[in-house]
Amino acid sequence: MPHSFGYRARTRHMFKRGFKENGPTKLSTFLVNYHVGDIVDIKANASQQKGMPHKFYHGRTGIVYNVTPAAVGVIVYKVVGNRYIEKRVNLRVEHVRHSKCRQEFLDRVKSNHDAHAAAKAKGERINLRRIPIQPREAYTVTTVQNAPQTMVPVPYETTI
Image 1 (cartoon, rainbow, N blue to C red):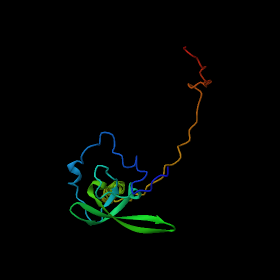
Image 2 (image 1 turned 135 degrees about the vertical axis):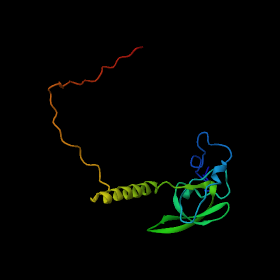
Image 3 (image 1 turned 180 degrees about the horizontal axis):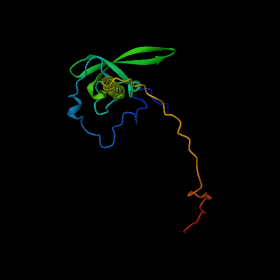
Image 4 (image 1 turned 135 degrees about the horizontal axis):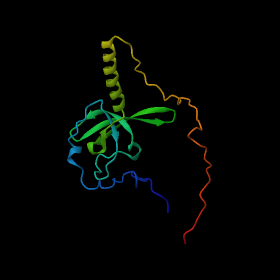
């Protein structure tokens, strides 16, 4: 039997609600404010079929460009061939949430500003750049109170 090519084809697990997340949408979902320029993650909520994104956009991150009372317009960049196409998708608020992808950067900016202000007050310079994890320091292994041990596999025993 040939498989179908419907709008929601092959989304059996993708649109499934999580464990203990079934039932009606929580009211706090509708109380979240979205503004133009916000970065949002698109995650389809299967309990609300209206304003649902196509399966391609599920799990994507975009920027809000339009806000209406019940929905938001999101710009998502889609790879088509050798270029990016800007896709404008209108989604109900049940299917979007604020993205945390920028939170680490904003935290780092704040901590860097505080460290810079403290260093400037002391009159010294400070390095605010991220440094990759360096190799571990060298050390010498001694056998003074660390006798070498011979390691062998434990023989297999059956208890039947």
